[in-house]
Image (cartoon, rainbow, N blue to C red; front, side):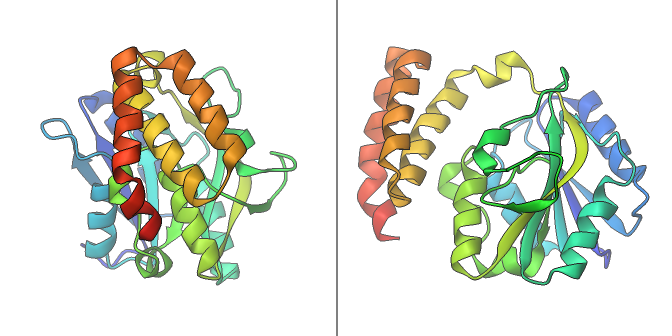
Length: 243
């Protein structure tokens, strides 16, 4: 790893052209003190948590930047705006921008408890796609939860940041994410959304959201995925609550 101020991680999985576009959008940023690390999940899918934690431990940078390989930064000042926030607010652990779908609708904006997506503000959680994180804070709280593999990584990590006395911020500067409908509807995604959703909401004691997650599972999971997600949640529950 180099002595760059920011380590940017892009995880590729069978999408070389999209990954190249993501990397080029980082290279085109006005903020230049960045090393770019590409992790290839094509042969062995390690998810998001493990590669992110490995990159954080090996990095010498002050900040970590995560970008999905099917996303890109159309605004050349995106990273500089995020870095400015972390430089000026030492207890701010993470900052992220406005992630737009190709149809220019906001992505998952409702889960961040934002009053207005056009206003700079503190937030409860963050979008792991296009987020800048203070590396020492990330390592202090243990990084992404490896059990989660992917999905619900961000709110789970954000809850530990807040318990450690940090907070996060949202900046209304945009980037684009082109996640395909097929990717969003795969059995693996459905399984992880159900299992990880239960584990996260149980630890947060959010009974209403647990019930809503059950309803979502009934509507979106195949019978086999539904059974496996609930079985694995029950199997993991005692250890998860005690950790």
